[in-house]
Amino acid sequence: MSLAVVFDSAGTLLYTLRVAKDIPKDRIVEGVETTTLTCSEKGRSLILLYVNSKEFIEAKPEMLLSEYLTQKEVSFGVACSSIVTTTEEISELLYGDKKATCEDLQTCIRKVWSCCKKMPVVALNNGVIVNKNINSIEFAITSGGRPFPNAKDTIRLLHENNIASYVASGDRTDKLIKMADYLGIPHGNVFGVATPAMKAQIVSGLKEQYDKVIMVGDGINDLTAMKKADIAILTEEQYDKKPKVLEDAADYIIKDVSEVFEIAKKYNS
Image (cartoon, rainbow, N blue to C red; front, side):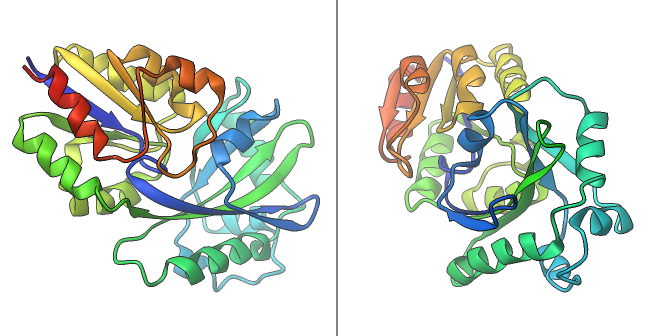
């Protein structure tokens, strides 16, 4: 029997530190789960910004973030959304915003980097949450992740037993590639900037190639893909408080990524 395992990245393969700046309330929120935050209110969309952190940190703090994004022709990807929206609508909110400054995102970058700079492998991502209800950027967000201690061995054991591994994540592809190189996942098996619908499509496509497909996720943006998979695994390695809808969709709930191999072995015959 052929078998494939699809992993989300943040909170699943990576321990991830997230810092958000609540712009209307002018306060920092640490340890936030961005997909849950996005889906907790209708009108919000989580946007990945393709900015270079080292370059961005040198921008004038008082400059509007929208102005910087426009001047540098920074593109974006929609990681998840609580509403049905279009690229054009997101563009209007993002590039037309008059509230968020570069300093808002720079503050998040500095906080995450101060905690992650000593890690051997770090995937740093920047983004915002736009809110259609207020027609502006509501949160600036930076996340930094490092592989969980048993992640590399888990991927190795899967491959040694002819079980394919894939990554389908809302994170940027170039950041995921660095993680994949460390873990030993082929570049062609990495899908970045994947929305919940895209993750489900990836799982569906793999089901045509493999006898069984396992989806491993940790957030509400993995729910559709978990339902589409033959076996759904919910991981609580980083956060142990999950929405009931995720628990109900899971065939297995784990506390350590190493448990994925033990589960996969049951179906690898």
